[in-house]
Image 1: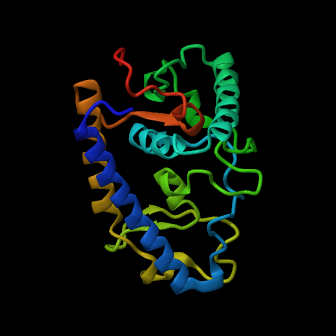
Image 2: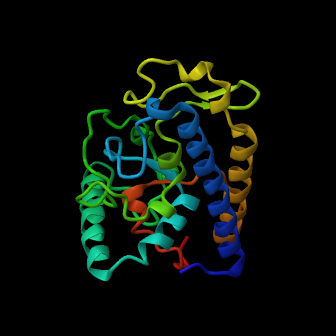
Image 3: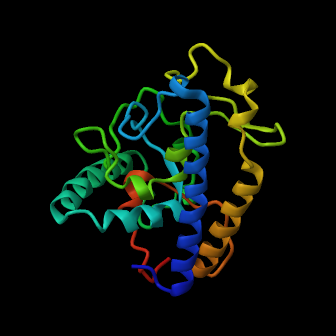
Length: 219
């Protein structure tokens, strides 16, 4: 559970920010039509380890705790097995599972061929916490080009845009710079409330995010 109403308000504002990305993605789909294969229920990219912010981790948990208890138990078993496997190589990776506190950066070079399903992926390919999924899941599949033309990420899913170049489509752009700035402000506020100091590099994995105790006092 979150410690304060301040943290709950930060989480509410972050959810609103993420819903803005959802609206952008929907607008892109309306504009590009069948050129975009990404949609709810597609799980082609939901494999491997994904880095998410501590703010994403907290939002993820807010959806996770609403799942059926039997489903929660199954997901936690998968998440724990994944984290235990990671700890075999990185014994320093322990609660609260913040990657930026590790004494090395090996976690930034995860193997591309890792096909381990996300622990929150149902057997039918659905995300169990779709409404609370992290930012990276909402942005995955499309290039990230600011309305100014600045490119934040040129990559896109290979299932998308087989006959067109999305980088040349102005209607796919979004105010990424301003929105990412809002994200950093919220993460800084969240860290201040949680840790007592403003920090902007607080990352974890989706699997380890489910094991974090945000009510703990030993942060």
